[in-house]
Image 1: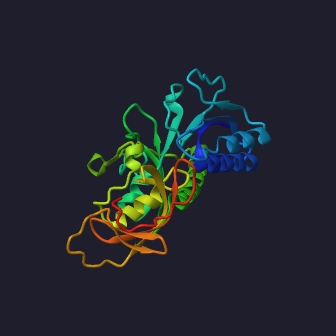
Image 2 (image 1 turned 120 degrees about the vertical axis):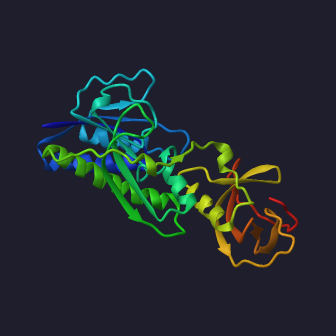
Image 3 (image 1 turned 180 degrees about the vertical axis):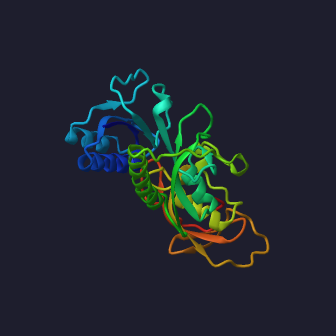
Length: 295
């Protein structure tokens, strides 16, 4: 019997919880012993209530993350899924899932970074936990190719499916003693920095295609890429590329045209059209009704 502990958050946490639950229902040598979930005020939907409801429905032992949390239940293997808090107990049993194809994009928000940078593959890597920065030995990887445009919500759905596939694969390998570790190649390592509110602000000096990727990567469940307009914060929900034109005195951030109140904005390279934007403070639609605007 392999007893499993889960630290889960977000959509990926829901998918892994369902996958492990299905495995335990079909394979009597697996047992889900406890689940820990966390609330996250930085996203619109943290899936906490859905995770808790799944645990209540299946009578799984459930804990909410707090600073004083102490897990009293035992487990043979523990998984951290979309978990960004320190786990103090049973580190030697802990397997961490990371939103990149390690050793690429160690660190924070790797999926968002990969979309902004235009990577043609996204995936998840399972590593043995250690005290170093995402440097643990690799236990497994799942990845897939993508094409653009793609929104973060869709990319998260894709990666969530890979998470579920990988967690089941690791558990089955552990059960038949075929789970192996591979050291990461430090020569291939790269890093992704943490993000704060400043990183939501659009830099019009960048290329139009990169800005569109940024808008798509910072959409739901995140708050959305931002600009200032009429002294208020605006969240851009949708933008599309438009054909480039020769602009002699190119000034990034200035409007070039209004297309049915959809502004065409000059970027460092290329042009984009904002097709949906809302005011952050009340959620109302932004009407761009004048041309002489510098965003």
